[in-house]
Image (cartoon, rainbow over all chains, first blue to last red; front, side, top):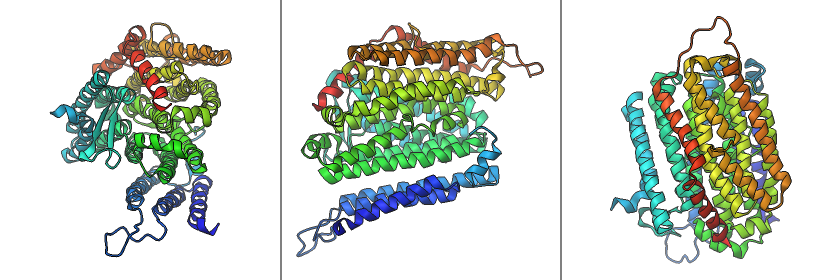
Length: 116
Length: 493
C-alpha cells in the first residue's frame, strides 16, 4: 500500500479537483478545481518516470541507472497546455463578468431567463 | 521533391499562417491569408488521398527521426479521407465566414478570429494525421483551445458561458485522454500508435490497460459529444458565430469519431476491443439512447440552431451505432455517415447562417413566411433537411441504408426500427422549420427581408449539390469507406 503512495495522492487530488469543478457554481473556483485535477495527472506522469534506484537522467561517472526523462518532458508540454487553458478560462471569466456583472453560474443563468 | 513532405505541410502551413494573421492586424487580409491556406490544405489532402489510394499508407518521420523515437505522421485510407473532409468543409466555411463573421465578430477582433480559426484547423488536421498518441493529445488541445476562443467571439453574451462550459468539459475530456495515454505508456514504454498496437497484446490482461481503455473511452466520448456526454454541444453550437458553427458541425465532432476509431481499432486492436472488452455492447446503449432521445429533444426547441445541434447529437449516435455493429458494413456506415453528415450539417447551418445574416435571429417564430423573401436560402434548407432525414437520392440516404443493412446482417431488427423511428422524428423537426418558412404568414409589422448575398449562398449551394451528388454517385464515399473499414477491422486481428 505504502509503495503506491504517489498513486494515492494522484487519486485523492484528482477526485478533489473533479468534485470542485462539478460542485461549485463560482467560475473562478471551477478553474481552480480544474487546475487541481490537471495537477494530479502531472504527478501521475512524473511518478511513471521514476526508476527504482535511478538517478537524474544526466550522463555522469558512476551512474548506471537513470530515471526515465521522457514522461517528464511530456508533462512539461501538458503543463504548458494547462497554463494556456487556465489563462483562457480566466479571460473568459473576465468577459463574462463584464457582460453579466457576476461570476456565479446560477446567477448568470437566472439573468438569461429560462433558457439554459 | 515537395511531394514527400506533403504530410508535414498539411499541418505546418496553417500553423505558420496563424501568427502571420496576428501580424497582418487587419481582418480582410487575415481572411485572405486563411482562404489561401484553405485552398492549399484541400490540395494537399486531395494529393495525399490519391497517393494513399495508389501506393498504400504513407509514413512520414517528422524532422527525420525514425518512427518509434520520433513523431510519425501516418496517412492511410481512413485518415486520408477524414483529412479531405476537414479541409474541404474548412474551405467552404471560410468562404462563408467572410461576410458572416464580419457581421457577427467585432471588427477589431476579426484578425484574431482568423488566427483562432487557423489554429483550430491546425489542431484538427494534426489530430487526424498524427501516428503518435501524445502528439494527438497536443493537437487535441490546440484545436480545443482555439475552439473555445472562436465560440466566445460572437455578439451573444450567452456564447461566453457556452465557451466556458465547453472549456471545463473539454479539458476534463482531454485530461482523461492524457491519463489513458499515460497508462498505456506505463505498460508499453512507447507512444507510437503502430508500436503500441504491437506491444499491447502482451499486457492486455492487466488492470492498467483496462483502466486506460475506460479513461480513453470517456475522454473521446466527451469530445465527440456521445450521449450522455453531449451537454456542452447545444449551447456551443447555438451561440457561436454562424461560420464557427458550420466549421464545428462539419469537422470537430467528425475528427473525434475518427479518434475513437483510431484508438480503439488500431491501437487497442479490433480483436481486443470487440471480443475482450465488449466495446460494441458498451457503446450500443449510449448510441441508441442518444439517437432517440436527442431527436425527441430536438422536436421541442424554439431556436433552429439549437434544434440542429440536438439533431447533431443524434447523428453522432448513428455513427456510434455503426461502430457498435462491429462489422465491415457497420463501420462503412459510420465512416460514410461521417462524411455525409459533415456535408449535411454544414449545409444546414450555412442556410441558417444566411438567415442570421439577414434577420439576426434563428428563432423558429422569426422565420415565419421567410421563404417568400429568401427562396434560395430556404430551398437549400429544405434540400439539406431531406438529406438529414435520409430521403433517397440524397447523401443521407446512403449512410442510413448501410446502417440498416448492417443491422439486418446481425438480425437486429429492433435496431433498424430505432433508426427508422428517429428518421421519422427528424421528418417532424425539419418540418417545423419548413412549415414556419413556407406556410405561415410573416408577423405583421416586421422589417422587409431580402435574399442573402451571393457569397453566402454559393458555399451553401455547393454543399447542397455535393449532398445530391454523393447521394447518387457513391464511388468516392462508400468505395473509400468500405476499404477503410475493412482495413480497420483486419489490421488488428
